[in-house]
Length: 155
Image 1 (cartoon, rainbow, N blue to C red):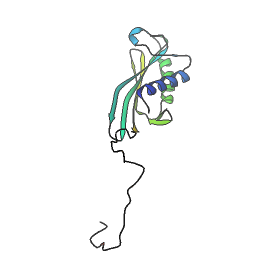
Image 2 (cartoon, rainbow, N blue to C red; image 1 turned 60 degrees about the vertical axis):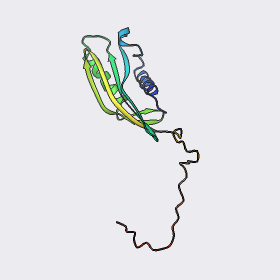
Image 3 (cartoon, helix red, strand yellow; image 1 turned 45 degrees about the vertical axis):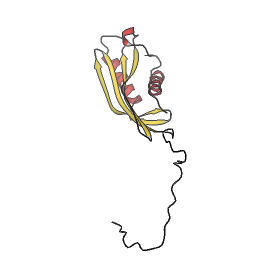
Image 4 (spheres, rainbow, N blue to C red; image 1 turned 30 degrees about the horizontal axis):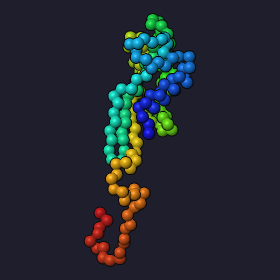
């Protein structure tokens, strides 16, 4: 099962691998941060369950704090291009390829922000099935008898 924690951990690992010289921080921005560094947050978390499946969705938001506050336009463009390539159409978590939806870059107060949405479904086990004789792998047997089928139409 893919959890939100695994999702965030995978994003952090991808950033650490592709930007090995840049810190990926887990601290709150209020606690301070080093430059350059990344910060990853999940927002708009949603989990809805039904009898047969669980839907999960969220917004992944990546902040990049450049090495300097001023005169960092080229650095931001370079990082933006590399992040765009890293999180392109698909995102793989535990062997599943999840679609990246609505990717968007923005720069606010000299900080690069990249966000995208992810939505995926997972099948439930049989923990919600209360019938002990229920076996979803078996179909019912159907009996066909010869007879008058004049009342049945193919419409």
